[in-house]
Image (cartoon, rainbow, N blue to C red; front, side):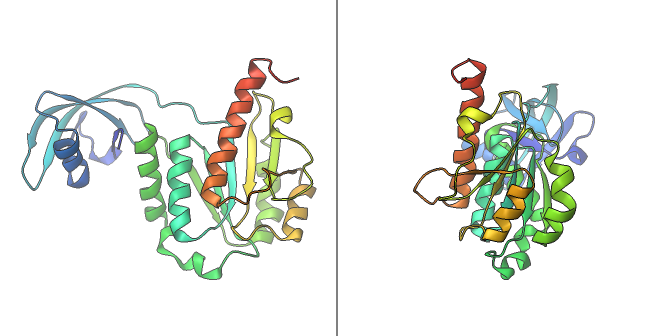
Length: 254
């Protein structure tokens, strides 16, 4: 972890006590001592440092911190993501990735090629989702949790949720291998515009699902001949979009 994140309810007059894995990390990994400063932040709040005022370097580990939180969290990327629910092990990676990248919102939806059993996983319970998002924030040195919305019905999502959501974005893309590319990310994303990406299940979108997205203003985007896993597609697409924003801002594209 690159930052220690503290739940607001565990802060009392800008002091907190770390226990468990966080305290062990400070003692065994950081090898910090009394008087040292460590990078810390309050979940959904500011970030800064924690000064160690006392600690127990033997099990059970504990670390008492005096907090100084002057800095605001980094801005989120201008990218939000719709993803068809993947396998639980893949979803864990996606949650960590989107939190560390700085994605603001994640819409997890159903699709024809999503296994029904995935919706019974304990991973999609809010507390468990939050746990993996926190790990991503700890990696990316951020404090603000992405918003995650679960939608168990594809038709219900595209009929009732997608239209009002999509109007907030200047650019909407659906990743679809071997699809007829209608626009390219490099030439169509203005650097100031928000982007909404739709990424399908590992078996791909059904033709009906693609049609519902494209009729709602989404442009097909083909990343090439290779079919990517969901977590790889998330990172690759976000990287391509942010690179395009930089290039467009610098005037490298017409």
